[in-house]
Image (tube, one colour):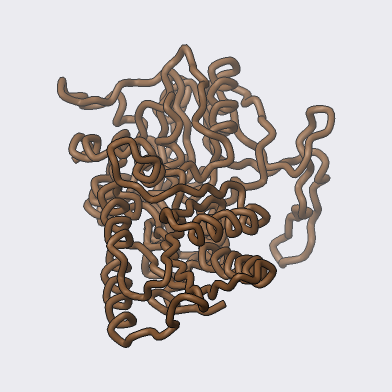
Amino acid sequence: MAEAARDNLQPNRPLLCKQAAGNRTLDFSVAAVLPAGGSGERMGSATPKQFCQLLQRPLISITLERFERVHWIKEIVVVVSKQNFELMSSIIEHYGHSRAIVVEGALTRHQSIFNGLKAFVVNQSPSSWLEKPEVVIIHDAVRPFVEEDILFRVATAAKEYGAVTCAEVQFQAAGAIRPLVSTVVATNAEGYLDHSLERAKYRASEMPQAFTFDIIYRAYQQCTDYDFEYGTECLHLTLKYCGTSAKLIDGPPDLWKVTYKRDLYAAESLIKESLSKSVCIFTGMQKEAVQLGCLLQEALQLMMEQVDVLTWSLNKESQCIQAISSGLYYNFIYININNFDLPLEIVQLMELIENAKLSALYPVVVTVVHLNNLETASSCIRMEDFTNIKELAKEAHQKNVLLYRLLINYTQDMDKVQESAKQGASIIDSLTKQRSLALIGQLLVV
């Protein structure tokens, strides 16, 4: 199944990370193990948190995408419970996670991680594509916002020091790691305060953690039943059984773990924010369309990081086709002049998005801007026009494309046109950020 998924890989995908996969290279091999066997008890949900949906996509798939964006991580082993094995396999296949393989976990976290490590060395068939790495990164499947920078830092430090973790900090000072935000206290048997820890001496241990493979594997081979049942820290095992003292690395604040339902909402909000940072505007050859495209670009550039305007074309070297297939945009605007029916270009745009498999990962927003010249056209909208666009919006939604409509009236008064463009840009910005299902197919008027 992993091999089948490999053939479906789409290399040009949006990088929702702050730092691109870049030109970094390593002179040693790196793989990753993602424990994903939790039951989601603290989430209070029947669905384990790693399989909860964020914008119609499982959380575990988003984490996997982050790792597959890092070209020097060769293999990724996902460890899940027996009852979720088939579900995880289907996720790998559906989303084209070409470097991922699913392994059956065990009753405890440490036993599951050990199973993931064993996949590199035990019962290796001649046809297996897994190779034992020199360094292995262990990362929680429910920490989806990991960046390449911290993965690179822990991997290279692990190679140098043997084991390394990321300790969560808010700032750095003289190389020290920031103390715990909250004071840690110990209680006695009656539930009263026994003593508190001096925060300056302690830090929060986070994921990812990286190890030379032989060290972490040897540590797990020596684990006792007590270690497997009650242990929580991989680093402690390497210290206990291999004498390896981990090098601590200052990490970014976005390595937090999705644990409770409120964390799902926060994670979805962050993904929406990332998706809404760029938009591509398509115009026809008409003067009014080009003019409005430039005005929208000027207004949207105050709200987004990247706004491009292209003249609609479908020839072989079309920039429009390249923009859609590049994976850089998850938001598109098409400007339609004096026409409230269903333009052929919108149908073509939908087909291009589908062919590029763009909406297979995240919902795509398409906003059709109807520019109505009050001096040359009638503003009459037929009921048939509403029906056609609603049907298309319904069909598009099934393919994870959110279709919106916006009416902007055009006059010769440029001050009014500029003001309408600003208002329209504000509405478009809200649509891309909120990705509201309630507004798909609706006609919004500036």
